Amino acid sequence: MLTFGIDWDDVIAPLNDRAIEMANEEHHFDPPLTLEDITSWENTGRASVIKKYYDDPRLYDRQYVPEESKDFIRRLQTKGIVYIITAAYPEYLTRRMRQIREAFPDFPEENIIMGVHKSMVHVDIALDDGPKNILKSNARFPVLMRKPWNTELTGLLAVNNFEEFFVLLDQIKSSMIEDRVEAKRPSIIALVGPSGTNKNKITKELCRRDEFIMPKAYSTKPISDGIHEQITMEEFIREKESFIETTMYAGYAYGTKWEDMTALMERDHYVVMPIDLSGAIALKRHYPTVIIFCKCSRERMIESILEKNMDNREKTLRLIALENELKNADLCDYVINTGHEDAVQRILDICGVAG
Image (cartoon, rainbow, N blue to C red; front, top):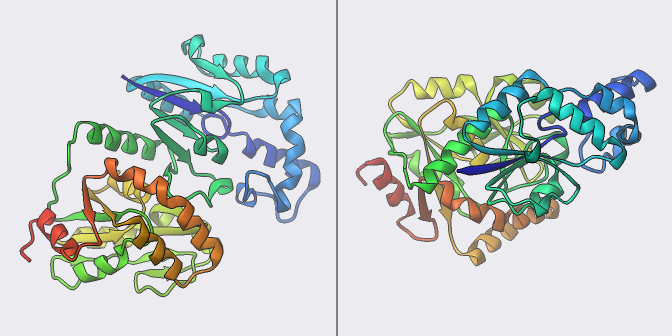
């Protein structure tokens, strides 16, 4: 039976939302602070003012558990053994325990773990929004809950909401029993894997054939790859509801819109997309999706990243992510080596398309 370690603050019970409320009430910011202003775990910039509320008992009095979080925990308990793992100031531990009991009166008390060293807890799957907690996690599958303060973490398993977590859970279970998804038209062919594995090049080669088509994609990155259309972060946030999937990679936002994908899925094609695993998992919620992991030699991936036309910050983030992304191969339906000349043919074989 699977074991789950679920973080409390900002996963089950929003905390920074309440701190933002308190800051806006006290300081009357114009424009008001939002969660998007918390751009790092250190709360720098405009959001730095909320740090003082972390040691304010009023903040913990305001904190509550939304119904969707209660439903999430109840549903997850049908999938395995759930542990709630939480860090809090010592003087608030009793208050936190009472908070958990009130929200989950039937939750086993022995499954509530309090302490700052979350890396000491060994579970199959951990869900946390804290970058350090995820990077140090001893879980077999550490999963990041995407928040504005962890957008620069790249290459990790990540979800935007509870429903995506359950789809990821299904994918993890499928990988354990080697239950591969068969490619049938119409379906999405998601090419995932580390930077430097020629996913964009392979996508373009496949789309020269009548059976394959590529959707319009959007990114906040200044880019001219023939695949993505640039938009501002403000536009991305404002239009978020129009995206079927969104993800963060090396500090930039990427996404695909509902209207574009719906139009393509009505046609008898394979919709091929270079995307990260988190985005592929999000797509799998709505459409048949075959996830193909692309890899090649580490030397070639590193060389390719260093050759890319991007700033050193982005290159660094991609290089750091490389090892984490390689761990995701076991979660995919197929694995191909893009360093071989027959990489495109291998995908055609998977799709049952004559070469």
